[in-house]
Length: 342
Image (tube, rainbow, N blue to C red; front, side, top):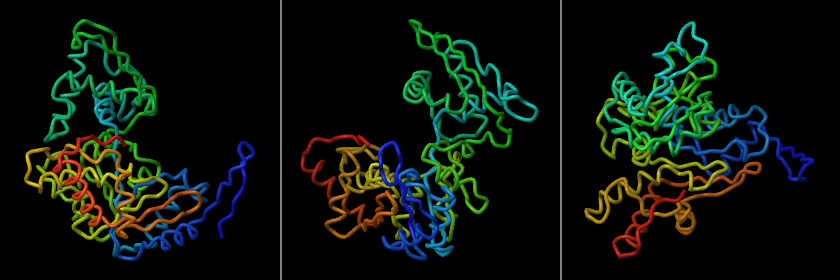
């Protein structure tokens, strides 16, 4: 039975949950053996889980059993692999290295060239930073996260961006050479998927930045060719394959704002509409939580609570139908288009 305590700071009840509590809560929202489910999660929202992320993963695997499939997004920073690869070439990562030193010092054009060398060495089919400007924009959006992994990036001012002085240093335990792979980078989707992909029984797709990790019956089919080297159509995306397999989306302590399936659903709906109003990859839903009320109305999801975490188990095929209806209302009927704000 779940225990609760009150914190001295704010008198909020903090549930103490065991794996058995989690199993009961998952079954209460309709999770069953043999289901194929994509999980988005926030461990902290539960309260205090006895053995942390491992208990959550163990509970999920116990409920769906190996006849089902458990999938989690293991997305990583778009920058982290490249700076770790640069550190490896400089001898800052790898065997006998200290993990500390100057990774790069020079102008921004040279910095972009170092990134280009990394993706060429990795055999990437798609070039993530096709020009110094694209890399500059990504650093502006994401560079503040680099200190989390021990990097300090300093970019000076200049009339020409490609001439701006750059200094990148690293001060963290060294990463082994065999771990400097795009699909072995730490994830930014939470501690549960970070723990999940490191388990020996799971498989992580070998794709830069946008990988998925899976366990169970359909693992190989869901992750097939989701890598840096294979050309993929929309229908090949792991989240669309989960829809075709009759899958579910399970939200643990997060809402549909974290539901990555909705990105893919939008692209599929735009493509299948046959219109020229939008292109696959564009977005029209606005905030993804817009699907919550329609899913409730048609019985497309079941809600519950485990500890302090709100839980939703939604049917993916129903979600696609709702996205199709929203597209017809917001785009085909001339309503203003908007981009996802989640």
